[in-house]
Amino acid sequence: MILKKQDKEKIISKINLIANSALSLTTVIIKGASVNTINNLRKEARENKVNIHVVRNTLLKRSLSKTSFECIKKKITGPILTAFSLDHPGSAVRILKKFEKNNNGIKINNAVFEGKILSMIEIDNLAVMPTYKEAISRFIFLIQEASIGKLLRVLSLLKNTKKK
Image 1 (cartoon, rainbow, N blue to C red):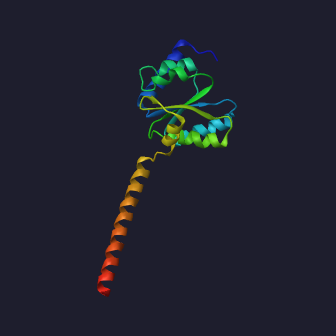
Image 2 (cartoon, one colour; image 1 turned 30 degrees about the vertical axis):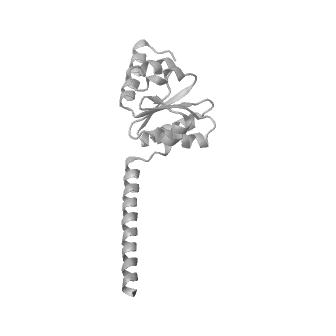
Image 3 (cartoon, rainbow, N blue to C red; image 1 turned 135 degrees about the vertical axis):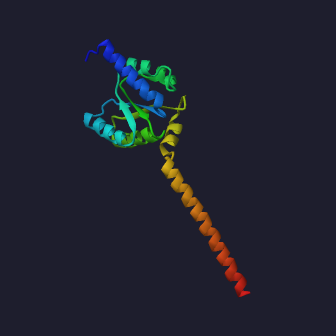
């Protein structure tokens, strides 16, 4: 489809606005992915506050100018899908990892977090990074576990001292 200059400018400004507010960017190779798979991916992404776009590479490169994702411009080649995480840095990678396991047409290519291109190991670490709610619940569980353990040790000591 042929785009007019003003349409291209709208796309560039829209993606630039999203990129300026995003926490991380993940690019995915989508060769051979079915339309139904991409639609399912979009649905889950919307639920997790992830913006997904399939845009021409030249428009994407222009839209990433003057953002923290500018470092990835040289690696943008071929048919790719971009996913911007807006709420949690690892949410896009989590969703894409899940879809990558179930679909042969999707493969995570690159990810950028805090202005740095991540290695595949760092991408995996980003995917398992807990959300704010998960981290708080783990912390509360840890505090409860520690306090219950202390209480049991005190009760055990009291029991042993009464026997003597």
